[in-house]
Length: 491
Image (cartoon, rainbow, N blue to C red; front, side, top):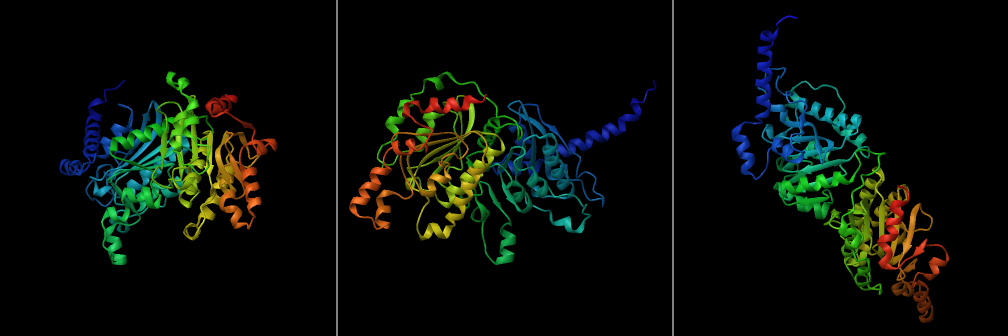
């Protein structure tokens, strides 16, 4: 065997130099500026998000050998690779704002496509960390290889593996568009996201705007609905994303993980529902209190809490089983179904369907929101899409009618008899009907006697139970146990 070690040293030295150059990102000055903005660098983000010492970088040398002899760009502004989160594999892609503002050059684009392909081929969750300016301005003057766009690949990936987007700075153009394919979009509260930034908006429309005015995190979480969750800090965003991924399987077709049940979860006072839920349909209460009673202690994770507040979407564990909960919120407009609420529910019902999460529907609403403003918002279309989402869901759908359920509002919440429910439960306090008795009678021109009859027929679970509209009418104190029976049925 020959001695070739000396021959290798120049190449290995060059590899070390180029690797160190990539790891230095945009240099000490730009790293310092990133910190002065109150933001972590891309490499710090990946290190803090992944389990310790688990990240294995891919494509670090991309951008280091420009064909036209331009200066090397560290990792071409994108840190990417595989790691572990809670001991499970994940792929991570982080835009590096210290290199050309995190813009997307050709090597950067190729790396993005490679990571999304790996997620599809290895069936591993994908996390996108966005903090970049979109397509690089110099791209038009350079070679452009013909290759599938990562947008195409991300569209194909949807529903195959969990995808999470973290918007941690200012994300514009192509980068922001890639984030829209995620199952969960979290924005750090000082971040912003838009299709085109303030300079382009000024040039195209003559409108001056700041990044926050154009696409601030709070606006996207409360008005546009583009962002699902806000995070006060980057660390909070990482915590939310890690917990979200922990409740989902690695890929479509696998069962969600099962968790040990904390001792206190078995000691919860389910009888508390008797105190929480008023029998009178016109009295408000907080659905969050109901969910806290049904779920394992400290396991609930609300999704898109600031948008469509008439309805609560939450991940939670019940008896160790991760579940998607969709529940009307009587404390907000009596829990009526608005366009925003329906859009939110449709998205998260589809997430539950893709990844095999049991779906728990908790009903207490007076129907789809009526009125000129609601109609102009497109509530009919949105409610129809929500109905279709729950209709095509084929996992364990547990439907619980807590109190009122009227008209199409009951249908979009999955209450229609024999609609693929694993079980349909009701509390004795339910009040049902095609239209609410109060107000509905007047709209129908009913007499006083007829109105009283309508109210009598709609009050209580006995008539619908007689017709098998429900599988079972239960004591509120037994509700958690009844839900657990179904969750354990096919284990």
